[in-house]
Amino acid sequence: MELLGIITPVLAICVICLVFLLGRKKSRKGERLPPGPTPLPILGNLMQLNLKNIPESLCKLAQEYGPVYTVYFGLKPTVVLHGYEAVKEALIDQGGEFLGRGTFPIISDAQNGHGILFSNGETWKEMRRFSLMTLRNFGMGKRTIEEKIREEAQWLVEELRKTKAHPVDPSFIFSSAACNVICSILFRERFEYHDEKFLFLMNLLNANFRQINSPWIQIYNLWPKLMKHLPGEHKSFLKRAKAIKHFILQKVKEHQESLDQSNPQDYIDCFLIKMEQEKQNPTSEFHLENLAVCGSNLFAGGTETTMYTLRYSVLLLMRHPEVQAKVHEEIDRVIGHNQSPSMQDKMKMPYTEAVLHEIQRYSKLFPYSVPHAVIQDTKFRQYIIPKGTTVFPLLSSVLYDSKEFPNPEKFDPGHFLDESGRFRKTDYFVPFSLGKRVCIGEGLARMELFLLLTTILQNFSLKPLVEPKELKTQPVICKIVSIPPPFKLCFIPR
Image 1 (tube, rainbow, N blue to C red):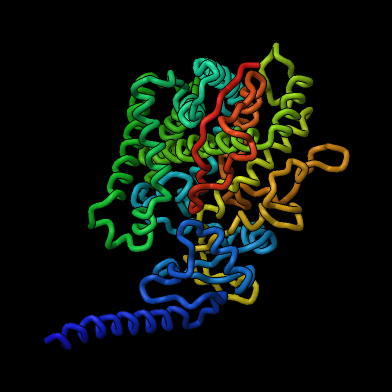
Image 2: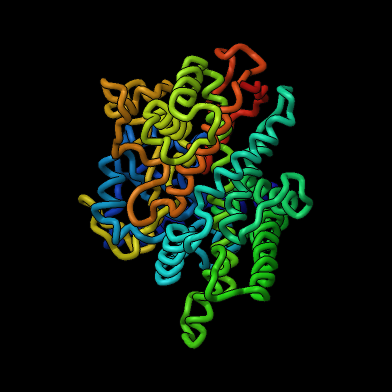
């Protein structure tokens, strides 16, 4: 009986391995996927990765297998692109073939193929085209997005003044400011930072963004068919995602009751007008579910990402007080203290622009792009990538390219300045990804970062609680998102 108890699990493991190998052999028939490390049954290559820093592990594998290789996350193959040439070749030169969105099961189950970020085909084309046009033309001659951000920047300064130069974790204040910018675009409304409804929305967004890096979500993404039937934190993620959509739909209902089709005021108004125009089209993509998910995408892409970038910004400026001093000098010389920063000032401030670019390069907030997928069997270099295969463009490998950015591990605004001190553009600056799937909010994000950070530095000096050289700047979590270490600081009025 004891021997039988040992033999049974051994036989089970052998059967699993055999099924895995046969399935893998069958799936590779007629395919020439790039080479890569040999995967294990069920787990794939997970045991060969540092799960606390997956991007770093993927970069190390590129040293052995080259700039294009295959890894298995569980049972599914993923093609990894390392370095500028491979990323550019796929996302720009062959952008039409790499246009698909790779699978991300927890998001897929929350959004059901709707919205902008994780949709495909006609849904993606229609929602992206409409959203880009609406963001670019926002206001219809009324208040522009820049004016809304400048207004929010002043509210942010007032909130920072309330700290009275005492130590504070700025995360909540930064996140509130970024969230209010999205609220003003979506439904022409901003909230007081401690408004009950606003705090409810913020808690939903913060919790889901933090949880996206959690082991529960990673496990769900590996084995979604199994995990969706089991209890765990993934259930809370899906519940919060549903609550965010419900919050947006409540605002939609208010808009429907007061809509003036000749005078749209915000994103929701524009979407509702488009819905009315296409109400006779049975295949129209303009319906409430797409509106709710598009709104969720804008919140997800524009709130926590901006907050974390601002956190990295103040952390790096405290770590490098000589850089902070130069930014202060440029702000004082170009803008002064009697007017708030505007986008017109940006062209006259090459050093500040270089600092903002270096913050985004150094922090590599998203080490790899949101997963792509090939939309057809695709010949890429000497390989054949089958339709639907997930593709990871390693953005961190471009942002840390040692030929383009000497000493990439060092924070140095000089990476974006020429010999004359003028701002230097480079194709290797890819924090928003590349190609047709480039981040829809790139223009908004650039504007927010410039206006919010310059307004903060116009009014405050950033004082750490320890010696600058003692500040840690490396992320505490580096998976889908690079999370900066926790810290507090004092905002000293200037």
